[in-house]
Each structure stands twice: as structure tokens, then as C-alpha cells.
Length: 314
Image (cartoon, rainbow, N blue to C red; front, side, top):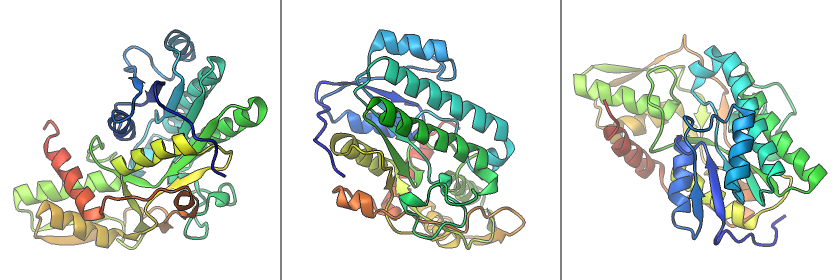
């Protein structure tokens, strides 16, 4: 399953989506490699614009691509902005992968999302459970767009021999997260909510859902390290899960966040809000065999994420 090592040294590496949480973590990690990192802001090249993407690839000639560009958000954003999430993510994936192929990119990594797995798939989620059942309804448009990108990378590999690989990160958190009060993911949402409650001396904090769903959380800089490791060592049409292999209930997780933030009040749960998938834990057996494991503990990671949040502009 492992391949001949791919030498990043001296390569020109494009990180698509470099301003997002995932992309910025990849840029931080790649700064430790002997590579030339290239990025381009949306104001110059909108990844939804096929002609602009093609022209930029033809001019810049990146040799390696980490495709982390996407329209992302939490459960409310996914469920509310359904048309935008499916359209924009399919177009972004299509434009970058086709431009990479056309312009002779040596290796590309497409980053999926663990929401692509069927809602009721057996736990922990194995890579081969993809497309074996219905998706979670709230994020189905985003998941379908991500599946399309992954299948496109597979198809170019099968037809053209392109060294395009797919990875599947679990729930991520850390510096660069989106702290929007409605559209954020659970980690950022809870950090913000507990911080504001601490500042205002609120007697309680309401967490959406029942608190019973189980989730796995990975510090984003660990994920970036896994991606660089796989880019150097892996080549196959089989996708690879990236996670910690451990999960906890949202209620347990909320307690950890409250503790790190220093909030001492009561935690309540609003069961009228959606829970999402009952459990989402990745099987990381394939990743472990490839020689990588996470090193940042949850508490340390949340502490680092909270420190980053405190530096965010008000």
C-alpha cells in the first residue's frame, strides 16, 4: 500500500485554501520542509472561476498540490446554505483537479471530510464504508460535493495515471477556526460560548442537542503533519482516514472546553436542536500502518485553540 517515497525537497507546493484553518495549518507545517510554498488569495484567483484557475496553474506551474480549498461550516451552515455548499464545492474541486492534471502537477492530495460516510455506518468508520448507505441529511449537499472531488481524483488516477490521493480528516479544531455564532463547527462554537459566558458571568451555557452524540477531535496541526507524511510516503487509489482513533460524547467534550476556558457555571442541553450523526469515529488502522499517529492531547489542543481565539479581532 505504501509507495516509493515522494521527495518534496525543492518542489513548488500549492496550498489551495491557505487562509482557512486547514490550509493555514498546512502552510505552517510545510514551512519546515525545503519547499517553495505558493498561495493565491481569492481576490486574485477565485477557485470557482475555471478560466482563472487554469491560467494561474499555467503561469505558476506548481509541482505539488494540497487541495484544502472549500466552502465549509457547521451543522447550521450546511443545512441552511445547501445550494451554495454543493455548487461551490463541486466547482472548486473540479477546477483545481482538472487544472492540476492539465498542467502536469506531479502529486495532488484531495482533503475530504468525515461527513461523507453514511449516517449509520458501522463504527469506527472504515474507508470502505463510503457509499454504502444514506448520508446524514443536514450535510448531504456538502458530503456529495466532497465525494465528487474524491471520485474525480480516483478517476484521473485510473485513466491518466495521475498520482492523486485522497485523505479523510476527522473533526478538526485549532488556530484559524471560524467562530461565527451560528455557522461555526462545534469546537469553535463552544470555545466562543463558554468564553462569552465567563466574561458576562452567565449562570449557564446552552449546548445544542442532547449531548449524547460521540465525536472524535483532531488538532489541526497534527492533521497537517499527517498530510505531509502521507504526501511523502503514500500512493494509492485507497483513501486514508486521519484521526486520533478516540472519541467522547459532546457532553464530555463541553466539560473539557469549559474547564480550559475557565467557565464555572452550569452546562445545559437544548434537545430541540439537531444532534447530527449519532457517532463519528474513524478507523485509523490504515494510517497507523503507514507510520503516523497524533501527538497533541485534547486538553493541550483546546488550550492552544483557546489562546488563538483570544488573539482573534473582536
